[in-house]
Picture 1 (tube, rainbow, N blue to C red):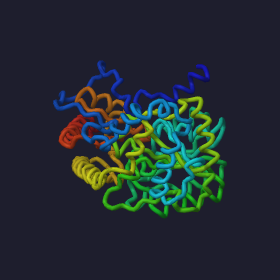
Picture 2: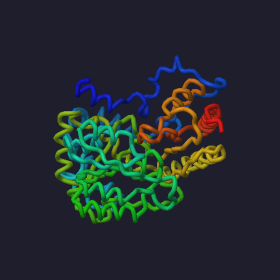
Picture 3: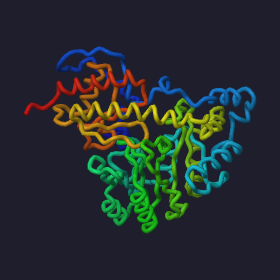
Picture 4: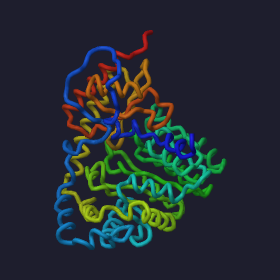
Length: 406
């Protein structure tokens, strides 16, 4: 096998979120009966059930029809007036000063921001710490840039007032030469939020060992139960030149189709990201950039209503899973739930295929978030509630067909 083939085998996207619909299930054998119900795709949120921020389309059309070519061909890091607007909003939100000309970039989605940030900090042989479980692309990006992985355990099931990161292992990785640390807060897939104490200790370790840290705060606006959230950048502990924060409007605000993301922090790293963007995508979609004017400018009460609607779905689905004997921690932010199926007799990758064929339900296998999560599945519950509830009942029923016999 060639070096290139080996590299892309590590990037295998067959079961990545959103790709499950490409799975061939024609030859899958299953136990039990075919279950009826509306197809539900839990691999991503349903933007028909939760519509984009009001006014987004109007702004897009304005950028297309009125602003025209100057909107289509912005400088690589984004149009100046939009950068100023976004930098001011994010400065207020994260309680940190952001220079709109030096410390922020607009990217093709937060996925684009993550790619650029990793590419700007990781080279062949570089040691990189990631959390397990955490966003599926973190591991794959380290592989792509040929870094050396240092997994850090997140014991999310056995903690209540904190995320459960193993700070001792994290420090050991820094002592071993890790120079980049990547994590999401709120965590994807478990939906847990790092406590202020955890974020403070992470910041102190990053400062002590001179590590670059990339923190994905994509779901930080959708907090449940009046939960407190601590922005890493707000602590003023880590030198700004060592931090990059990634955030965008694609999830809570349902603006994913516009492919917009941002990253802010280190002037040097942001500059490298711009240089890399220049040879990858040139810029975020020019006509879409103006939609960022709608971000953090939603109608009065809109965000509160959206959070409440998701919390209602969360509570119902969590109760269903717990009543059925699944292990699951209540989601604290975002729209993911990560149940563990006890005594499952088949690998979760196969269970995902069975679910798709037998129950018309699409979920993401836990192994996308760490190889050891062979009995977990991830669901995005940003869905029509009635359909989601029915689909989860089908998941539970199918799981019952594949329980290990005692």
